[in-house]
Image (cartoon, rainbow over all chains, first blue to last red):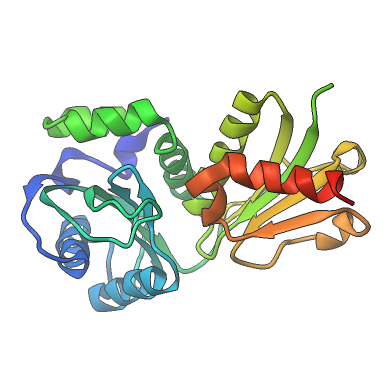
Length: 148
Length: 106
């Protein structure tokens, strides 16, 4: 699987400083925007916040996977932030979040290899070893490798 | 004898929770010593589709979904446990136990 097509080191940030969930989401959307895959960043952020308001994407173990599907997204993309201090995310296990993996998803459903990559990354996050490695690792390239 | 469970997972955007829930159910079933087949209904379509034979063999059905189940009529006359897609991500063993209790206590 070639995760490099949707995630590279430029979209990974270590020691991200943010106080709130919304701040994390805004900062990561900037990272995604650097890839020039967003035609309407605010619409995309809105879709992510809307998704959070329905139910938390804090899946436990200090990990969150905020995601939004929006017309403002041209192509599926992903950004990763490791937070300097954990942030409250109303997680399933009530634990604050320190690793955030955010997906941008285009509006239209289609047979898309990028969407498949996102789903494969999601599955990886159910593996406790992967989660532990992600929390420990501070090298951007190695973080990309863990998710590949 | 191993218990046989079938499941369908689906979420609104169809790229994240659908697959995490599926993985969590498979992992829990394995550690509990049960057989479980899970169909994912995601943004890229239906994968690992439950066949007519699967549906016949399955003792109970788990719908871990936050959206409509596609081709739901396949499961008419089956016992179905309906939970949010986040439920197995939080505690898949509990979801499986609850599903089995549904058929054991009838």
